[in-house]
Length: 420
Image (tube, rainbow, N blue to C red; front, top):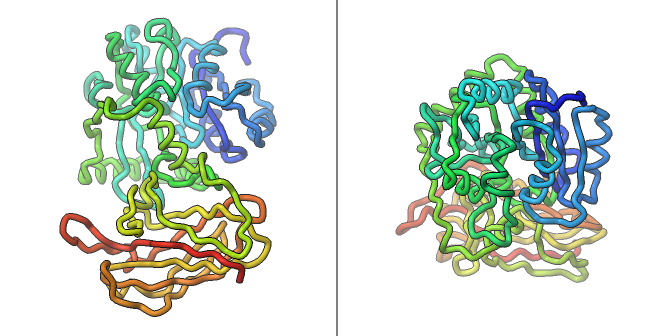
């Protein structure tokens, strides 16, 4: 670390990411603007994350760890700001990736307007499993309005002195809005000035769209993006994603910012369930178990509320389901499946904890949903932790039919587990 203060302090809040944080850190260390420090702040981490960060032995990187968990980026962000030496604070999510030109684009925008308080860069919020229509944020031909558009923290930076004007990041249990929305709302209310770089330099892999991503984290998408930067045609691929977002209506869309109907802390509670941080107590399978479909936030995988005991698939072609049981031997999994088209009831590929198996349907019968069958497969549960089942849906199984006001496709009912 240089003796003089750096231009940027990069704050990376983290929890539960372990070794999978390394691609995000690498995207910071490979910035072509070199005048920065990186502070990685754990939210009372107890896993391998500290060893991963300190093992880099890079003088630009510091590790801090909170003594008590906050459950949100707000606590680590405040700790990082308190320890920051830079003039500008930039944030990077522990599962997001910066293009090598990100900090230089932000620095250039700040030099172009020395009175600006916030710099916003273009961001692509990628959907999982190659779903089309990723969301585009942060691109604007004029000063962006934080009350109209959403800016994930990975795409904005602000002068450190901003905190003296609007105060620190707030604790999530005290808010009805997400902590980043509240932060920007307070900045807008204080009349602080925003400016856009006008270019995409941030790639977000939102945990909100990746159901149960904290149960078994991985960094495949982040590693692929780092490789994409080095591959010919990267700029053209970015432009193609932007053009697709314009066609899909996901380009710089207006953002509804009224969260008054939500209770304080509700956003935090839903987020911890959706990500798989808060999950049912782990149990031994014993002679068997039945899992019923209950309401809950499932990202892009399943509708929030089951209908008549059936949870309907939404967009993700590889939706997940949590099995909060342990077992030491093979387990027979049985799943009730419904679909409006009989042709959808072919063999179904499943992945349990990364091991692919094929589930086969029993007798296919007519039902209220069109058709129904019970699929069975033999899987292996983890002996000491919850397991993830991932449905690898075929095109026919993903297909939906418009019925009344709903697009109905594949749905699942009760799951049964028993020793094989």
